[in-house]
Image (cartoon, rainbow, N blue to C red; front, side, top):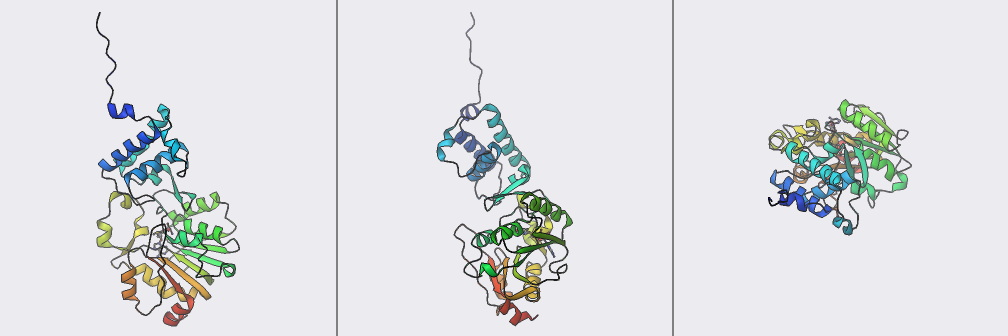
Length: 307
Ligand SMILES: C[S@@+](CC[C@H](N)C(=O)[O-])C[C@H]1O[C@@H](n2cnc3c(N)ncnc32)[C@H](O)[C@@H]1O
């Protein structure tokens, strides 16, 4: 009688049935594909864990004991399938899932909008203390709103305020409208299409902005994950400070007396200080990572750029 042999099995895949094994296998897949991180995570293991949690409907903050849970074969297949798509397409995970989590909240995203990640969210969570008296904030504008994430977080942080949100991209504004609806904030947030302050007639207590700040040379070297994002969201032009510089010069005319400009310029702090050497700015420190956010008071902007 012929000896019966067990089916040969691929040892790695066979072992990967606990959540922790699937995450580790997924991390290897992401790393060997050369994936680049930066849309909410900064390494392969964290990204694989975040993707697994999102697919399985678990929170990232789940107790570690659940990492030992055995996955059903369909769960394992769903996680590894998504991670495979991420590795092959080099699209950010948030686009594949149609959703980004930012500051503990879900936002609908697709390639029409940048995936929200600005550290400005951390300042809004603290209602901009100690720089602002939150009780006096009645009017807020978010310039270059993209997905609408900052406008929405600002509306939550300052429940007594009305918020305007501007973007040049009509396509981005469609996604922002969807997020505003999703968060039930349609009565408090108004969308405007146009160039920076052009569609606005009001003045504000708070101007928020995360404008594009890459020049052509930097944009040309971006990995596929970032090239998947809208060009208008990242590329400022030949001059990296083309958009941020205009915001500095125009903000004074749109701020109330005690108002504050909060603008994310990423790695451009030195360039901004060189371009605007006389403008007093504060650059807050972020305990959960991030830098390059400039705070400038209306009085200082008005002293330099008048109304
Ligand atoms: C870096 S993304 C920021 C998106 C969103 N605020 C965030 O933090 O995730 C910059 C946004 O500014 C918009 N934008 C670029 N130039 C603009 C301009 N001149 N006027 C208005 N919006 C502009 C882009 O379409 C894009 O949505």
